[in-house]
Length: 72
Image 1 (cartoon, rainbow, N blue to C red):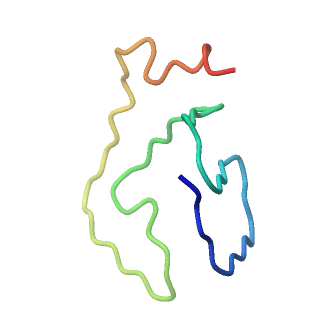
Image 2: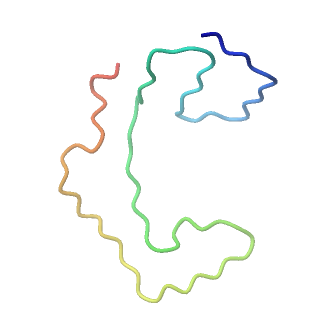
């Protein structure tokens, strides 16, 4: 089925997938995992974070979270 697109502006693509129109499938080519404590990803002009004691559990018992070896 054809896609009808209006004006498009792409400012930045970093490691992502941009797809226009029809496709059978889209699969990732990379995977990553990020650990952060409470309030670690807050952004803004004025931020007040009162967390007290914060800990991040980084023990991961999974060997594979998102296998991508067959996606090439």
